[in-house]
Each structure stands twice: as structure tokens, then as C-alpha cells.
Length: 425
Image (cartoon, rainbow, N blue to C red; front, side):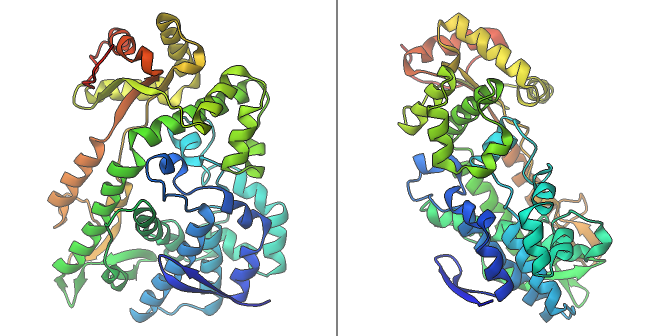
């Protein structure tokens, strides 16, 4: 086996070990070259064409930086464990399907890629066999959560999948760069990693005293996470395109012309092409419109400003969790608007929460979470979490000539007036 040297626009030269090179060359990894990291965001940010493959290489590089930081802090890390961490970082997104976050998180068509059975199935098949030949199957499986926690250190799992992990630290920089935004975090964050009680933590104290500079670094990372969510991840054009694809997939599933297992053999373009040619009119129409960037428009929009928290929770239960209830209200709206079923798409996301704010930190008081009530960062983190929660939006998307009618009809149906002040009619 040979090593590889890759030139990455985010991290510069990345050296892959012989083990990592062998894993990168597997078909399951090469498939990720056809899956864009940000799904439909390129319709707003044309440069956002980077892929899950690029990102996975970057996560591997960041994982090694975190390991180096831990070694500098005094932690002894065997070379074979670092090898396994690097491979697990490469494979952390191997179960991703085209437009995965949209299909899994936003319309709830499938289990999350990191929660369902896809990884276990892959480990039972060709991927597991390849890792067995390389002698790392069990350790990598443990790092990816397939085996008992005792098989690998918990802090090592945290590097691959934790609150502030290699995944986050790569995609924040990568997404910002390819979206053409100027935001970044400082490399000083890598000096703050430590192991405490078998967990990967951010060390916010030294010699018994709290370090405001370290606290500022971690808050800077979370601010970047919020900024990208506000500007990119929740941009309404990205949302509507993703929602149209999701509804197309949902219709195709219901008509038996597509199965979840098919998605592991498709990339972004082949999925859209298959949907456009699937023979089911509504699914095909939505896919073709997306391919042509002939997107539906916002006919009805409300936010937490006018939807109380309890009602938001009720709507999430009805229209996010339940496919049946969501389809029923889409059908009712389509009938009232005299539109085809494909021309009405309801989008109700889960309530927004910044899970990264619960990162374990080591302070002069011991181990705590960054957003604990007694934390020195509590006020700043609390304000950031509130802003993040305020990003929640409930949409009804329709063709341009139905926008005015959709706003009033949906407002009557949901008993909350539309917040969007557009020129209607």
C-alpha cells in the first residue's frame, strides 16, 4: 500500500497514510464525490459545489490535528489508534445519500445517516470485508458507534462524532470558503483540546485559573456555526429547492419507483435524473423544475415571532414528524388553491437547537458544559442559542401566480397571518 499527498484548498497539503489511502480508494468513498456537501445551496452560492468526499478528506486532516493537540497536552495515544481515528474520520459520512440532510432531517423520510441501519449493513458487506483485510474493522467500528463503548476510548469517539469535533471544524471552514463568505475561526482552538474523564473537552483553565481567551475561541466557533446557519443552511432558496426534491422523493417512494436502498447507488445528478424520468407525474414535475431552477415561491411564512412555542411544537408533531398529516394538508391546500398536488410544498422543520453549545469544558471548577447555568460563558451562549432558535420558519411554497392566494388561504387554515410582506397579485 502506498501513501498519498493531496492538495486541499482549506488545509493545504494533506498526507494520507497507506491505510487511509486504501480506504479512500474504496468505491463507497469514491461515491461521495458525486454528493454535494451543501445540497441545493449552490443555487444561491454558485461556488458551493464541494462534496462529501472533499469534506471527508478534510475531517481526516482535522482529526489528526486534534490528536496532535492531545499528545502535546500529555495524553499517550498509540499509533494504531490514531490510524483508526483517521480512517473513521474518512468514513464518518460514508452512509450519506444525495441531499441527505434534506431527506432525513427536514422531511423525515429516512432515519438519519448516523442513526439508522445503513452503516451496520455496510460493515456486514464489502466495506466491513475491506476493513477486515486491513486489520482495522473492529476498532473503526467502535469509533463509529457500531460496537460497545469499551472497545475504544470515549474521547477518541468524540473526535469523530462529538460536540466540537473534526467534522464541525472542517465543514465550518469549508462551507464558508466555498460559499464565498469571509468568516473563519482561529487555529488557537486546536490548543484548547484535552482529555478529561475519558471525554474530549475544551480546556478553559490553566494552572487553576480560567482562561478568557480560550472561552473566546470556543464562542467564536459557535458564532460561526450560527452565521452559516443564518446565511447558508437556512437560506429560503436552498430550503425550497430541497423541499421540492424531498417531496419528489416522497412521491416516488409512495409509488414504489424508488427505494431507500437505491439512494446508496445514486449521486445528486443521477437521483434528479431518475426522478425526472420516473413516470410518476408529480414526482417528475418537481424534479424537472428543480433541475431547471424553476423554483416554487414563498406563499406563506411564519416564524417564532407569531407562532407561540407550544403551537410550534404541535405543528412539528403534525407536519414534520408525520408524513401522512403533512401530505393531507398539502392536498387540502392544493384543492383550495386549484393547483396540482406537486405545486404545493409544506416545510415545517424541527425546532432549532444549537447542540454544539453543550460541549464539555474543563474549567477551574472542574468538568461542566459550556451552556451550564453557572458557566462564565452562560450569558453569551444563552443569547446565541436564543438567536439560533429564532431561525425557525414554517413555509408553504407555491407557484408565483398563486402566492397572493396562498398567503390568505394558509393564514386562515393555520389561524396565523402570513408574516411575509410581498407585493401580491
